[in-house]
Image 1 (cartoon, helix red, strand yellow):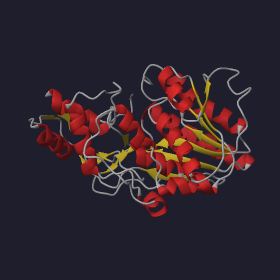
Image 2 (image 1 turned 45 degrees about the vertical axis):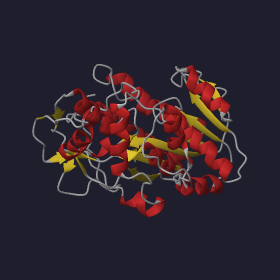
Image 3 (image 1 turned 90 degrees about the vertical axis):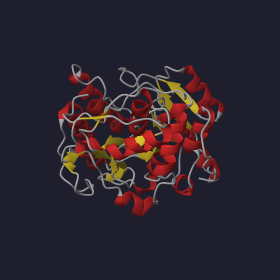
Length: 346
């Protein structure tokens, strides 16, 4: 990342620029691989900035490639912004029967589609989105590299006294969302082995910026004077820009069977301590409810740090940015993470 980290972030334009600024590692990765890149599900929370980063990193590496964004694009502004930055856009509902009929053939696929919130009562749809759709992606792009997002939820809860789950741990999903995410991984693994698809699975938790994320939830609770739920006593967080860059760095690592990696921050964040950090910055009192459990959703990111380097944005900077953003009335996406949920029901 060549852009210096500012003391505060005053508007969404600056925020999106920061989230999209490629690291040296991302530039190197986009220079190593050949061929065009398509991002499936590019209109979600991470999609626009990681697509912009892929474009910028490819340009910085001197590689001429098409970068194509596919999404329903419910927000026309996202589509227009990507177009203005040299990114092709294809409005498409990927769950439609003919969704893949005329999508371009490319060498590199970033698969970001998933269903989580609203699962309770719509379990069948969640399973369809998280297992049937990736199968269609693998069938369509069996000759491509595929990097697919998963989640640390596949591990289940782990003792807070440890460092968190590592990639070789047995999976212990809780609830339909996490189980369907294991299903997604198994489908990709099966088809990767069957067709020899070079693939990677990104187990992410939790990406955070200033408009959404676990730390944003905490800051908004403190600012509003609401109690902070301590039941999920600790967790991991990573700046979304760092998560974007590490994901792009996974493309040269793709393999059959899939390369699997945890992407998250290095600190085990204690929820009560994080809330108190925001309370101090905001000159507010922190109120709490419930008692921290002996286990939590935690992942060990040692493998990714060893391969891709540590995050560029430190935790203290995240606290500063988020506190200032919330206090100054910065916009939010209105999408709580529900990190405090312990039974897997979303």
